[in-house]
Image (cartoon, rainbow, N blue to C red; front, side):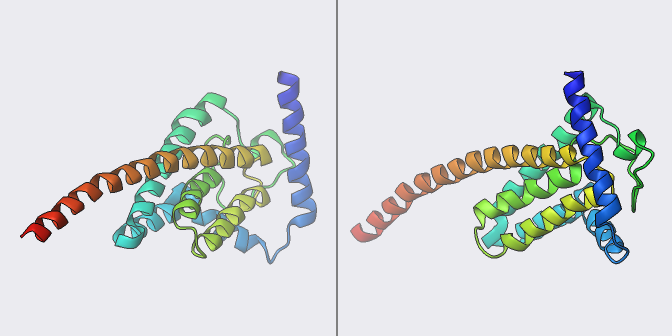
Length: 200
């Protein structure tokens, strides 16, 4: 098992070295720093779900996305990170130079990726229109910025996405079932009121 994990880490390292040596460009550095800033502590996604909850049309989706975000955040920061205890790439390898804000917490999984997709995957399912497409692109770019900035291993980002995918789909499944049940409960009440009006 240790050899397998070491092999995975070596592949992760090789990918980050390739990105650093061949895909970093001066004009991209500030863009990637800004994208990472958008994901810091999930502030952008928290603001987004709060805005969605202000409007009746998107309120339900906003609430479900907020639940998904909260679960993923708690699982990631208070469960998986301390359990796995993986340090940042630049702490393991001196040849990796991080860009932008340098985190001091643990690396696995990527919180930026997990929180971003915890929200956008819910919105993609509950508001399936053009609104969710740019958000998915943004979440992907934020995730890639973590690799570009050398603050996460590729497997951190991948597992952050997988965590968000599983939780978001479970939350959506439960939420949609609850909403369907509520609709069914409301229908008999409406029919009874219509019957009373007809009798009167």
